[in-house]
Length: 201
View 1 (cartoon, rainbow, N blue to C red):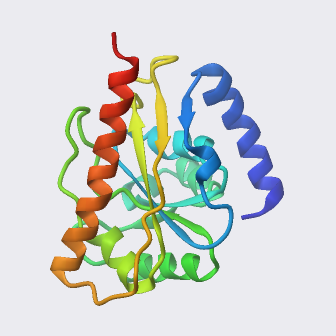
View 2 (tube, rainbow, N blue to C red):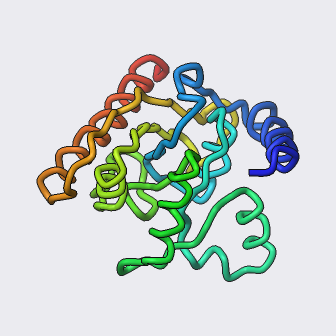
């Protein structure tokens, strides 16, 4: 991503999400600053990508549903932020090829394992995409817990960055995919539960 472009949107996001919404961020200091990564957050709303973008110290290129790219203005904005479209309901080879190229460039790829937005409280079923891509490429996965982005109430939004999950290159069998998905899901669920245990009164 162009450094000037990143500087502009980071400044804007700091004003909006840092000062405006007072988004709480944990774990930023342990996020790897080099090498390819797959960021895997839970998904609550369309606010998730920019809030996560604010929270993480590196630019994240999110795989986003193609419907968001139909609006010319919105398409311009999200492409400017590094997002790219994926066709849901089947295997989108173009999107997968683009995602693989991002990882080859040693950039950060963002994919929501649940696929679509979920109601707060319980994570939805994880699709195979994140785990399959990680297994094929041996790229580490970083679980991210997203809290409060559905309601977007000031001081009630949190992004918790989890520990890196190292992945060995392997054939993406269903068994291997399920095992990796279980690790990512457990990490996110634990971060969410721990955060609420510390902050809810």
